[in-house]
Image (cartoon, rainbow, N blue to C red; front, top):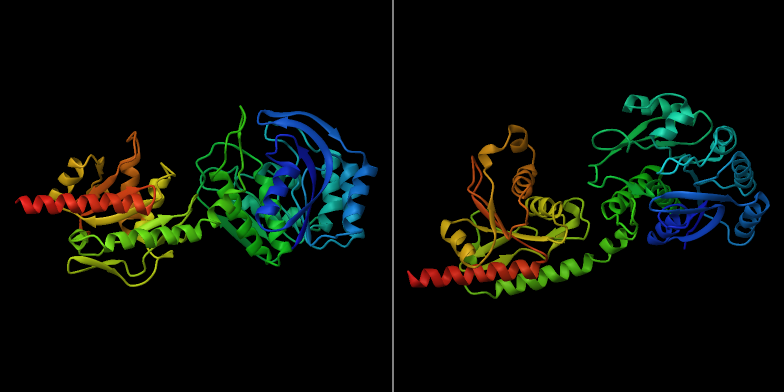
Length: 452
């Protein structure tokens, strides 16, 4: 097991600091160790008090770790003052720590100062030369580089200046920029931009701690710098999307969301197989399959892209009055059904499954008679940009339906458009629920045909 050391302050609320670091390290399979630099009294409302740990005891903590267990990687967080910074830098040199991630914590979320100007100078002169990676946010980058940072071009200049203090690489975090966040990695020879959609969460405590701890853990496991940053960002974004309110103030990051998501992979495939078996055993189910075929998908909790949604490769095809599948379900197998599910999850995360079936006025009437809630969108209102981007059309349509709807429907349909077959999409919390709805639709439709 890889050993990862966090050198940071203790957060009584557990949302940031050493507590967040250790949760993140454990989530990624590392063994977390800690050197506490300061004790803070804080909660979701802010920092009430800080009690610095005496320098001799900080030194004793580090010696205890390195004289026995050692560390494959380390990260720093809140170091409080210049004395702590210089002590940590000296110990990193003494123990030849090569994979050191420095998160230059200067200010708490509530605006409380966590590092004075003398401490900032010590970071530049003493600790950055020991760092494999420095991870400032925009306010920290401005303070360290001495320039205003409001655009990507200014992020690049700040990264150059910060790296000139001796760090191997710098990751300037762009979360404070408007629009979707862009993080910029500079390794001395080239820049790499990492972008993602902004999570629909206003303010979250502990994001910088989680990211730096995740990167340090991935480095300890042998990942390259770019891969470690990529994986760290992925876990951090997931922890932000799954942020929870545990007090009266801001939400806390949830690094355990990564584990919750990963452990569900087997269950997702299992439940999809059970649902398709039920559908294949239903008499006449093939009548509901559209000309373009069908698919049944199921997303992991906190799904972010189509790779987090499992479906059937080659789709679900009609064979006379029954259905067949070409292969077992797998993740990333369907762009279209994944687009629907991801759009729905953006409004109601518990609805993680969907299946498309044939459109007809009779089937819509059957759905209504069965008590299902129906909503529709009009493809004629799509912009040219939406039409041209693969997979965006469905996300746009479902998003239009759900915006301001006040409830999540059981069925979303459209009557088609230029080159687009009209389609009905059945939604549910899991494939079993979706399959049951489709079976009931099929039976009602069969009864209706028999009566005619």
